[in-house]
Each structure stands twice: as structure tokens, then as C-alpha cells.
Image 1 (cartoon, rainbow, N blue to C red):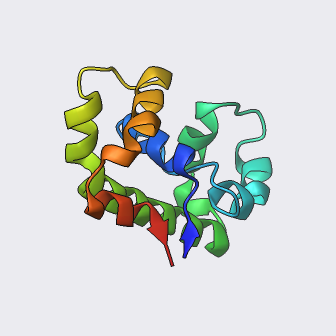
Image 2: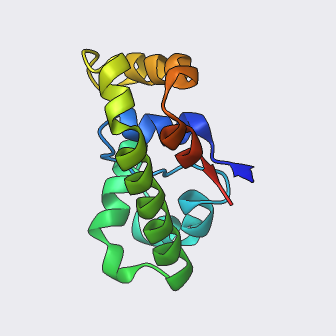
Image 3: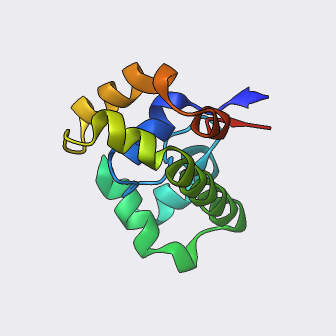
Length: 120
């Protein structure tokens, strides 16, 4: 089994999954690099995701597939880990502090959540 980039996936969940697992190695950023250069040349930071989503109907097939896969992984993580994150980090607003809380409490999370953090 290959470990999902925990920090990226957990940040997506901790941030309320407003951004998909956008920077995961070999994921959306890699598959959509050309689309980003063409469709969103001046976008930086979180605006890259917003721009890409605003132009979803114009992206390449590889980019669209990567986005769909990332959304599916994020949904699974939300379903499997949402209660754990709420229990251990629910009072912390989305952002870097919540991400740190999630990462530090990962060993306490349920087996279902631990399983969702890996992919075949």
C-alpha cells in the first residue's frame, strides 16, 4: 500500500475540504500543470485551485481525471475521519493550527480513518 501524503490530505480535511488534495505528489498539480499555465497563468496560492475549478470544463482529460480522483479521496477521508477530527480538533478553526492538531492526533484516530489514509 502506498501512503497518501498525510499532510496534504489532512490539511484538505482540516480546512473543511475547500481545496482538494491539490498538491499531492503525482496528483492534480502534476496532471494539471499544463492546464494551469494555459488557463490560470497569473494565479498564485489558493487562487490556483479556484481558477482551475472555474475552468473545469476546459481542462485536459488527464487533469479532469486527477481532479475527480482527488475529490473521491477527499470524500472518503471526510467520511472516515470527520468524526475523529471533530473529536480531537473540533474547536480549532480551519488553518495551520488545525492541520497541526490533526497530524499530532492521527495515532488516536479510528481504524477506519487510519485505513482511509492509505491507498492501494
